[in-house]
Image (cartoon, rainbow, N blue to C red; front, side, top):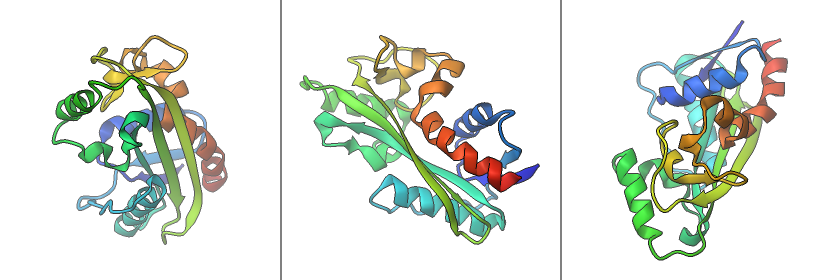
Length: 192
């Protein structure tokens, strides 16, 4: 089984990744070594995903897969976007800030975006894929599953927030799942 570093310190993301890939590719995902603190100063999800993957590969000497993801809200000109995780100091404060800024908004369309980048142990790009999940911003949080902005993101075609979906449902339609679905073929080939 091929080991690949998943360039994150977020264990929720790692568990989600493992669940989606279970039995589908011969890969064991591991967290990066201590000291993994990539500088996310890119201006796109693609740039930040690549920075994380290369930093994880450099620190570990192993191939790495990274994602950069965020919530893009039409009424906020695509914000918080690449700054989603740094929008405020805690997950609850990020939700509160976003709902406060959306207070008067009629257009509540939004999308979660995820870009995944796979690099070899030298940081050479093997594949980069993008997944999106479209929906709208709820007026108040609902649900306890998931993390981040999930409690205020109503998935198109449902009346539920991402946080009201089961892990199995979320892992079929999320932005991360959609990016990873495209990446799995590369992971199969890479892992042999």
